[in-house]
Image (tube, rainbow, N blue to C red; front, side):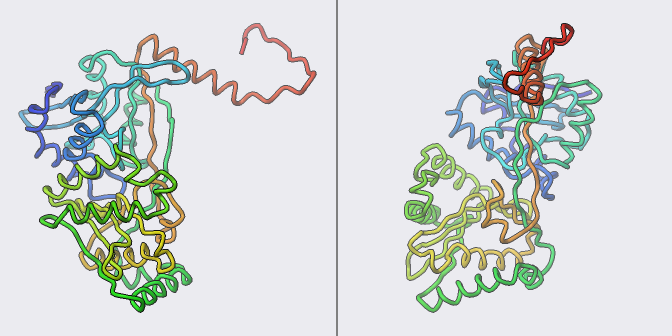
Length: 380
């Protein structure tokens, strides 16, 4: 029999850290599975940085003293189809990559029972917001549960993200890139090396992380992102999260930071994580003043060769399918976000408000001056 309990203090859920990360590790070897953003370190960093050390709870399922399923969640208010709703969501909804349900085994019954217990043990809520990768085990099992329990679920967003499969040799991969792009990469590399000393510095466990942090800040402030307002230095919440995560990930042996120095100064960086043989490109940028040398491409060229030599399985670009990412790959996965409506009056109101919006959106426009017939049985 499964035993469920809700953990409401950091002392309670911190004890689960080894088992928590073990659940993630079992699922994290494939590009469609849960990733490093489902780990204890990631959730703890979000709790500290985004939730100000409050508001997180963790529901766990155990059998014979062994962890079977786990869901860290937080509460917020969310407007759904103009209706204010009490929302409950995994902490990863604050900021994540390939999230999903954390289970000891890929069994739909575990998700089914977890959702049922959320209704009885997690307090009052109207909608449950969750995200998973299309085609993943989580997606398949959720579909089974939705049919069996007749759940009311609505897809509200999707995002396509690029990734690179590193299963061949570096030479084979490089040869598969578009010819013009290959020429540009080598040209940038030759041009930069001819103009001055080029050094690729790697920062991992035991490295001077503050040196990496200072290099990142310097590059961000001199990048195009600073003027656009999207740089790390322009967002205190994002900057705080990166600073906290960098140290926690390094302690766990997952941090993989890369800086390209040109003529003795940092000109581009890749802020990465290396977890279960997958490299996560969390953040990257370059100094706009060095754009003619393609510093981002030169660093990526060196980084790719390094990852191939280490036998890494995948390069996860994360985020949106930006044009510069798609120069390196034509492979993508899709993350979709859904709403699960609870059996409350507010949830019913939001659900049917959404259905009405769908009907109105599908209705053809009425020509000017036309008279529309009224069907008494269908006032919509």
